[in-house]
Image 1: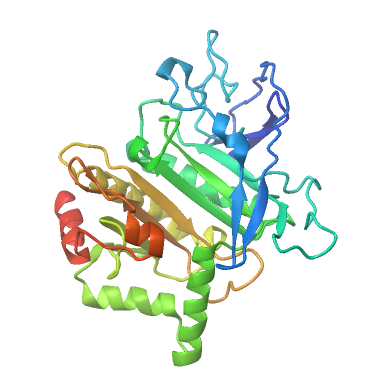
Image 2: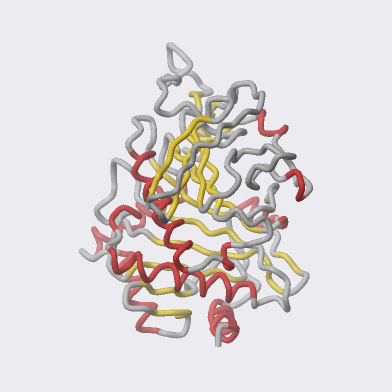
Amino acid sequence: MKKTQAVMADGREIIYYDTRDDVVRDAVDTRDLAPVVSGSELRYDRLLDEWVVVASHRQTRTHLPAADACPLCPATPERAGEVADTDYEVVVFENRFPPMSGAGRGEAATTTAEAPSPFPTRPAAGRCEVVVYTADHDASFKDLTPERARLVLDTWTDRTAELSALPEVEQVYCFENRGREIGVTLPHSHGQIYAYPFVTPRTAAMIRSVTAHRHRTGRNLFDDIVADERAAGTRIVAAGEHWTAFVPAAARWPYEVHLYPNRRVPDLLALDEDARAEFGPMYLDLVRRFDGLFDGEPAPYIAAWQQAPVRADRVDFALHLELFSIRRAPGKLKYLAGSESGMDVFISDVPPETAAARIREVGA
């Protein structure tokens, strides 16, 4: 993999990832852009012990542009977007409308107040990046070759390493939102990476459960879950030599698959070569199965990498990918209504065993 770093017209970093070492990336961003100013802040919810990001500048971000105005497409003589080159394989750049920014630049202090406040705030000192998988505007992740999927995996890994080294960052989250129903505002296939200055609530909850299970049984909870699912078999979607994919027994979403490496590792950096080689074909198979669920309707989904925090609670944590769709049937979405949004209690419309069987069926 060849990595080429450059600077965009407004000072943001852009990085090209290529499979060939002889590729030259020397295009210059000639747009007249003002420097990005975010002004985001973190506000602490004392009741739930969680940080909330307030990022009002994101109200003006690009929203569903026409295909001939897509900012993620390669540059042409008629159009200059975020990528100055006329072609690319995988490209990463700093988000123009970031919820968090300033990490690694010495721009953020740890607090905004000299004395304790009843309403604690701090600068949102993180980093948000866009990962574009392909120059083809009409392609989706499922259309990638296994070789391109491997390049994306290596890109996620490299960015995890770089972002984890920033002193303000506590957790790195690689993810993809796919489909207008999810809230995607740029239809060109892409994902994102958030480098948070705190450990996210979901990860913190997992760590509490894993710690309690270790104290109670002496075993690792992630290992037990994977072993129990493999033994039960009813919710297994795919099982390879190095990865296992299953619908969790208490799946929250209508169609939800968790993909675990068979050898527990804390993050993407710790995957061995055998697991990396098997990931592309298996993950491509999963996303293609999702697209076969709804009578030809593309499945809106979120693909979320769960990685250990950067500096703590790493030994017992297990890297895994959670892939889920909010579509419950053709033409029908799963809405987060009163129980889900008001009380965090999910009500599932599709039994997990039924979902697993259906996902296996469409791949047959």
